[in-house]
Image 1: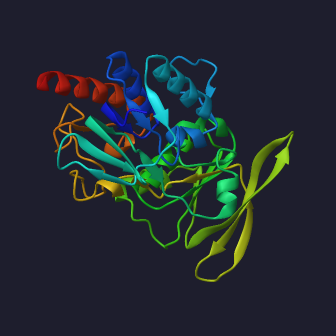
Image 2: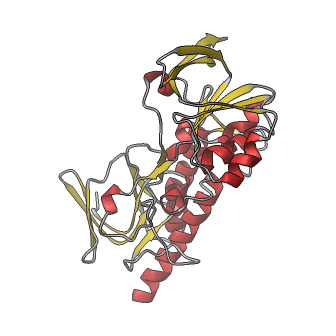
Amino acid sequence: MDTHRKVIIIGSGPAGLTAALYAARANMSPLVLEGMQPGGQLTITTEVENFPGFPDGIMGPELMDIIRKQAVRFGAETEYETVTAINFSKRPFDIQVDEKEYTADAVIVATGASAKLLHIPSETEFMGYGVSACATCDGFFFKNQEVFIVGGGDTAMEEANFLTKFASKVTLLHRRDEFRASKIMQERVLKNPKVSVMYDSVVEEVLGEVKNGRKTMTGLNIKNVKTGKITHVKGDGLFMAIGHQPNTSLFKGILDMDPKEYLIVKPGSTRTNIPGVFAAGDVADSYYRQAISAAGSGCMAAIDAERFLEAEE
């Protein structure tokens, strides 16, 4: 296998695979290093109903598989490999996967972001079956149902507000006795009759059952952090709103980042502070964080990389 490429794409969510599709069609023979979670965050989403072109919805993993096949059809190559080190100080750029070394004339970083989770086993078990890290993606599935949101910042308030459009009841679970969200966001949410709050509370366990061969969340065990008392509550959904962490640790001290460690790109482009290195998708987007906006920026990154290489030639 050729270890030197015109373009190497690190990451394989909607941004990385769309970048691969465009780069392949531009005869750049891109190599995609898919990383720890091939397909990105969509692979832990069950049904995706807001990606254009699928009127009946599509399963997240299936959507990513289709985009991958489309990119491969035009000449992209994908490897289930995780990048362990990079050297952007000279060109061609060096990209290491354990003992293996690749070089590239241009690099597209599409490593995405990961929702911060509670790290309890039952949360993982019911992810996509009642547990979600994206209200905008999954709120629609909880019409007239009772849902809980973990968090106390503006994100939690935004998600609570959004979920009141669908759910019959929204309960905010916060481990402290007051929210850190802005006062205006709190007021907007807390005056909604559908919203209630459990302060000083953490999720101890997600409860569920298997119905008709499908896992379903049925409730939660909630612990009061001051008294230690555990309360069992019924519920249909649990949303994590404790923030996202961009997957940028590999690029610390190399690529410019904002205070939350998202990569900074030049306005109106996907260019980073290093010429020839581009960033696309959630790794550089703390605001929209949608599959379609990630795919759009993947397209931009491939075009930016193509024009960069053309200008060099």
